[in-house]
Image 1 (cartoon, rainbow, N blue to C red):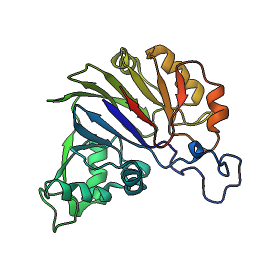
Image 2: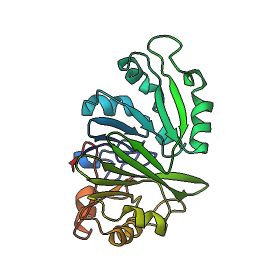
Image 3: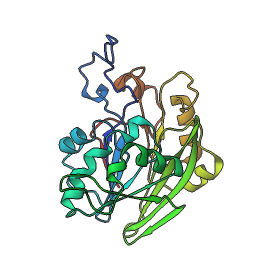
Image 4: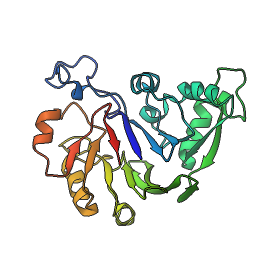
Length: 259
């Protein structure tokens, strides 16, 4: 299994507009964070999770050449605004619609923002086409399984995702954009080879885990490696990483995990 971190930043991105802070003006490339999205390859199946506003740039930068299915964790702008750029992957599939899995809220948002794309084939070549489907608790695929669990995120719920590759048995957990990780989600994540957790900033936030809260969740899950994501300009990569316990790290754009 391979995981590509396309983007690791908050909804405002880093550097932020008109911000002269040390992180926003840093020369460390790990402090340059586009909005959150990841790409998971599981026994050859290419799964795109979320579509940041920079999705096209992210895919070009990381040489993403295929998407077989798409999962939208929730309908907030920084996760849905790049979906129109999935049109290229529809082209590469011969005009076949891309299946989009999400919550009821996420599917409503996709239909409202991209009504022209809700169809079996594109209107014309070069347009996107989305086939909306509810994300099941367990999505069985020839290449493995993707389990889902709901995580509280302000007035919305986010899909937490657990990927298990059939050939290797390797397990990867992706819990972004959440204020807490309920016990059932902790139990579902145990035994993972790698975990990704929301870790917005050191200070409290009403709808996101703080870095300290994320560390506590990581210790409950007990994976050998946990990566924090959705980082703001409040965290310098080098300095923030030095303060983390062993087995917990900060993610960065372009990070690749081979599990």
